[in-house]
Amino acid sequence: MREPLEAGAIKVLQGLQQHGYEAYLVGGCVRDRMLGRTVKDYDIATSARPEQVQKTFERTIPTGLQHGTVTVVVDGFTYEVTTFRKEEGYEQYRRPAEVHYIDTLLEDLRRRDFTMNAMALDAEGKLVDPFGGMEDLRQGTLRCVGEPHERFEEDALRMLRCIRFAAEYGLQVESRTWESLCRHAPLLKHIAMERVRMELERMLGGSAPHTALQYLAGSGLLRYTKAPLILQALHADRDWEAIAQLSSVTGRWAYLYLHFSRSAPEVEEELKRLTFSNQQIREIAAVAAAAYEVLASKRSVLSAESSASAQDDAKRIWKLAALKFGPKALRELHDIISSDRRLDLFAQADPADVERWAARGTDWLDELKVTKLSELNLSGNQLLSGLSRKGGPWMSVLLQYLLEEVALGRMENRTDTLLEEAGRWVSRELT
Ligand code: ATP
Ligand code: MG
Image 1 (cartoon, rainbow, N blue to C red):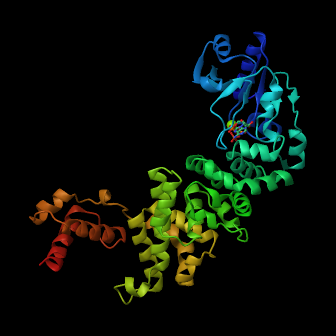
Image 2: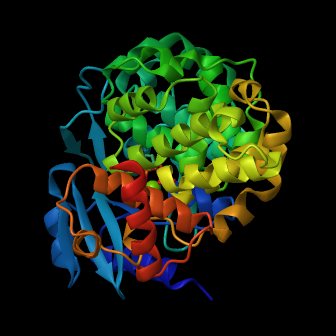
Image 3: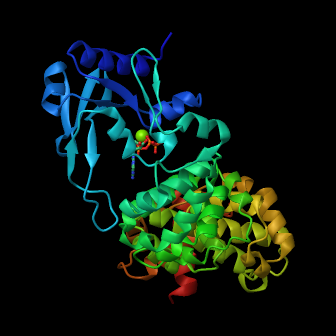
């Protein structure tokens, strides 16, 4: 039995054929199907013009008419159906906005980037593979369609796609393709940072981020981005194995930047240059900031209680950092500490503390009674009326103090208890 998604794709092919047009599955779906991988989406190429595609099916959406693409809806699934086309007049080393329609599949396949992405499959399951994509896949080779120099000159983004595919699919980049990529690396300056970021995100979020980093370092590609990046210092002689053990992409990005010993604000600047969303920037920078705070903290300075054990100090540092940067950032940091202790950063910390954080870090986060002010059973208004004082900057200092006391388990999270302690704090600190 066919998967419903694939069954719908076959219906689209048959619908087009019944109207006298040629139609094929093309690109990533053919590649992934041949490899026995899950297919995320089915792209279809056809000799029908967009308006003919629209007439053939009941439900269509004109998603990309200027590129010849119509989205066809079948059984609730969507399929991008694109008219056979040629891309000409590449300018500025980017794919052209203008395309023109053609009548044959072969030319449509020829404009594609790699042999494994230039295969087509018809409704009867017949493979069209003019550039030897299957043989390359069998050999584990990633190869440009045609002349690699021309392909990278036409569209410099293909260099990043090449590295992403090689890493993700565990392929060797064919030698001429690789040489050409290295030679054309400076062309990357023509590619928008947003596109670069999207490719890097997929590399780091993929199944072999360590391999992708190795290729990036080996090619020197990131020395040539439009806006200069800290990542240009990526070194080929480092081994990045540990990054693949981190389950979250946020953690992977933070880990990467911790290698360069850059401060959290510098990391934020870089992520902005890469056009990450504010939310992503906050999350990644929080992990970096937490790492510096925790690993660089000196116990003797932090600990007021001289009797506290080293274990208690390590716990306190960890929990206070969780209040400051959020428990999520500390969970990421815990994963980083657990997967790799070789970061330069760790040189500043007491190795015994590092062991404690690795062993107990997540338990300590689970112990936290509260993690943010909104969880405190005392509102700002309750505080003001309870103390009969006017508001001021002292309030946030006091609330932060109460939050820490409750979080560390030294005080109950009850309004009356909190107000009593607030009274004591005011007479101690403000009078
Ligand atoms: P994935 O979706 O997993 O990234 P994909 O191969 O489907 O892989 P898409 O970006 O969805 O990649 O593109 C679909 C197809 O369009 C590709 O398989 C390839 O044939 C062609 N293609 C995409 N981008 C380019 C490009 N920059 N240059 C040449 N051909 C491309
Ligand atoms: Mg795709």
